[in-house]
Image 1 (cartoon, rainbow, N blue to C red):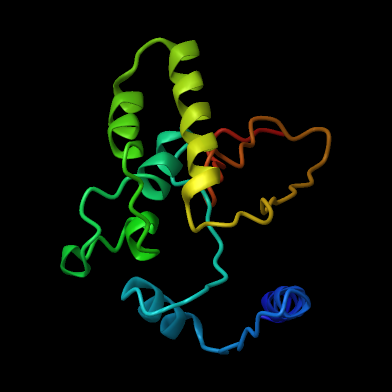
Image 2 (cartoon, rainbow, N blue to C red):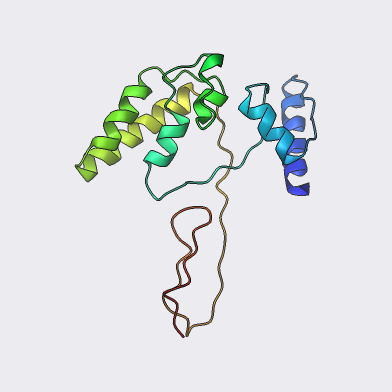
Length: 157
């Protein structure tokens, strides 16, 4: 996608200004995912979106990796794919998902986010958003809480 190439070239230029040579490897989506899931990358440009509307969807994949060995093959874990051993975050992720007090749970995820930001190999550059336009007489439409969960069955005009 041209958008991805523009971003990659901008990153390459920024790295070069710091004296780091970054070689771009153009691949189709299947090749990129295969390489990424096998942990054969140095740097990768990916898109991520939540699977469900709860902070655990990101915590469990970004900061949970109880077995960082190549043999583990935890392909659903972005922490594992990027060889990130989150150490104490493993227990924090497990505790937060079970916490029933909303305010305490939010504070737990906020603390995890701070630790992750300081220790992980992930660099989150931007949040992708989608816009939906509709006429004023349309009611009940929801784009949902995840990347592709639009709901049409409650729509009325």
